[in-house]
Image (cartoon, rainbow, N blue to C red; front, side, top):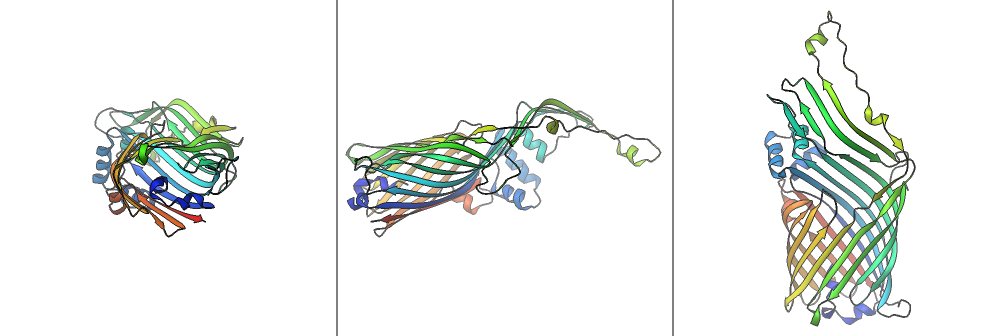
Length: 393
């Protein structure tokens, strides 16, 4: 949302209003390798052709990643009230529910799952991967600076659910005769309390910080912004289940003909459940999926702007994110843009955005980061967001 920050283009009565109320929805997923057609078949069923599998593998460049999120938020900003006698400062707050998933896997794991592990010779495959899912709600209050729309919110966090799986330094050995396997692994699997599930289940509690600093450029030529999102943690309750296994699992096959031959006394192999054997319950603290963004919005000439930004998350599934765009402002109350982005959970994509003040009370913003992904099965994700705000004067 950039239009409200271009204060020199807005009617000054905007800052003399009483309350600014907002709702936002954002949903989507992004990958560097997994196409929309593949996601569709994994979720809803269908035959996955060899050509489709091979195309995903070729796109990976050794490692694949995928991230998805759904977010719903209600916000308020007290525009007319002063904060401790400072007229430029006011109170703000939000209620937010977020669902976040990210996964990271190497080519060996993808190949073993979708193409198998057979062959004519001995095969050694690295099969590393991770999956992280978290659902949580935030209830926060903070302050903001009206002229620049900078501010921060500190939130109490309700942990609804989490699942985390990692397999590090894992290797799958397949014999040349394809009659034995060995999986050397280091597995962690954690899951929140399974006895209570659903919205506001209260399986964990935590705290989070969200904030943005907007620094206007000289002569109102734009702004520099630094934003922090979901910087915090959740402490999950004592019913959290954690399983760990660092071992080598061996499997030697058997001759099916011997099993079918009733005259041969064949004993089938039995394997203990190592993961369950090492499971334990107890509190577990997990970081929220925090992110830092830095951006520049600069006016080229009257009504023309360019935008560049970068985003960072300290996890394997997320590459440094870069975005650039061109924006044009109509009549002081409409802003449209085209954007190109790369990194994050995906590869290069192109999007569009539009923001508009409607009358004296309503503001609307629409955005998608990947136009191609919305219309094509070969897209590497799809995403869309909408924000509505109502200005009480």
